[in-house]
Image (cartoon, rainbow, N blue to C red; front, top):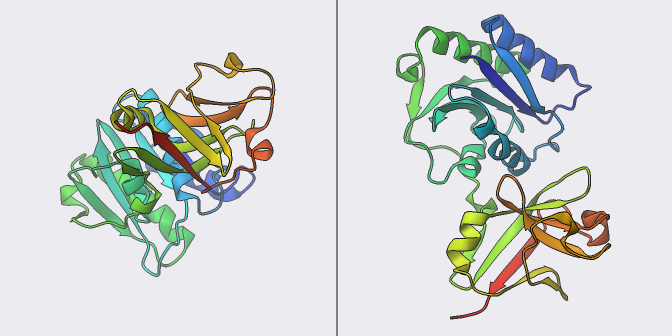
Length: 257
């Protein structure tokens, strides 16, 4: 292990983020800790999944991605560990894995529970890192599980002629990211014309290649660097101007065959 990325809803001014980083370094001083973000909205599991999906492939295989969002989601919270395409993910069992991967990875392990508070979370992070450093196969030091919490309702709903998605992130420019990936758009659309409904009487009917592809003040659609559909306004703030917020529903209608 050389790199650990950290994602949380703690906020950069909160000491909890530094405590997680210190725990990682105490477990292995050779680790390089990278802060993806600690500004995930409180309890916003779907937003955390988007941040991780957007970034993890940019890191070398063998990296760990530690997500500390909505930790105390139940009376018996626990941490899960899994590997996907050479990357390791240490996350709460709060449905986050079901948002990251569909289907889920074949092998998922429960590292341990932490119902005694945040210090117990740190103990489990330390245990996972030190145990994996000594033995990279978690089979010997954790429990393999066949069932995890799911949040499949946050995935887009599809039929042969439409996709219904949700807003999963609003960036600092107020560009609005929807949980519709390019691969899904192409799979359902099959190159057909479409109408993107983002308010009851407002539609967009084409995909732009960049933010300057429309007149100033006009809304546009594009697929961002992570492959997710994004709603923007040229030199404007889409979320405010279009009255869009987290979890709002959007609809893409394709011309029937």
